[in-house]
Figure 1 (cartoon, rainbow, N blue to C red):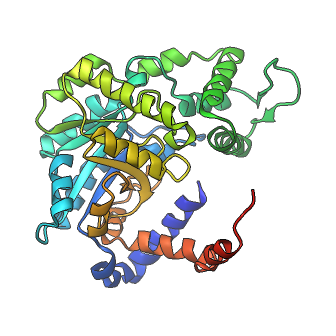
Figure 2 (figure 1 turned 90 degrees about the horizontal axis):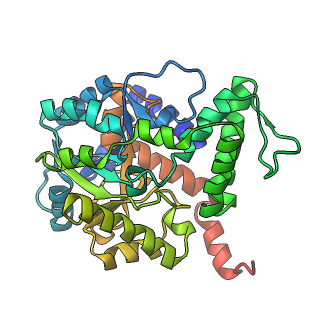
Amino acid sequence: MTARQTFFQKSFKVLHGSGLSRLLAPFTQGCGAIFMMHHVRADQERSFRPNQHLEITPEFLRECVDRIRRNGYEILAMDEAVDLLKSGYGRKRYAVLTFDDGYRDNLEVAYPVLKELGAPFTIYVATGLIDRQSDLWWIALEHMIAANDELVLSEDGSGTGISCRTLQEKNACYHQLTQWLTHEVGELEQRQIIQRLAERYDFDLAALVDRLMMTWDDLRQLASEPLVTLGAHTHGHHALARLSEEDARKDIMTGVYRMQAELGRKPKHFAYPYGNQVAVSERDARLLADIGFNSAVTTFPGVLKSVNARSPMLLPRVSLNGRFQDAYVIDQYLTGAPFALYRAACWARGGFGLRTGVSRLFPSTR
């Protein structure tokens, strides 16, 4: 569990048990929330689950919809929610349900639940995964660590590897490698490293994508449903901020062209792959605005407030985390209080803004 996940886990308990979130809600609640999901499927009974945060059960999804509505929120399509955000209309509170990447279980498991409940939702499609031209590298890495006692990273397979014999070692190995792959090496090299590992440890990357991802026929079926909005998620599922401007534009536009060609319409809404501070930049927001998107969502944690209307290409989301599948957590999310506490903690950890002020006086020469 990451430091951020641990923080939220503890804050949920404190806020729920003390009732503090109800006192803070008038100041922290905002006008709406965009919920983020990936997989919806039966609980996976495995001890090593580094991607557990990306999985929720259909029962929890149903409970989330019920809880959102019982809190007085209307579940809206992305088009309507963005219009309301920009217009600042009334006191109506609303929620949007979103899914990233285009997993097959979104169609086979999530869609029947949401159709029965009459809840609209958006799927952001990474077209390279649908075309079987990209890899689910983070899931492939999980499987390779699970199946082996050591991973050797050198190109020729020589030298000392990273031990992953025990559960503790496997979790440490996964954390170490994902940090390295998403922060230290470039996006192209990241994929090359995963492909070399897959060859060395006899792991079928293509079969994994085939098993987990939808096809264009699946997406055409969903595109015909009035409850469903299909948004863009690039072609190669790259962290845009780690690409050159030319490569970032190309990855975005390839995804747009593929969706137009296969589905007959241009997507109006976008989700940044990974969506965190490393993967998103102001440059990318300007690119998306220039291309003509109506909105773009990040994974920056938070609820929607009127101020977000000024930056519709950098909207925050609420992650429905598979580690926190308790109904009361939804109530806490909707108050906005956990996010306010998180921002306050980050501000305090950063020296209450003093470090930023000092750095302006003494700019870095690096």
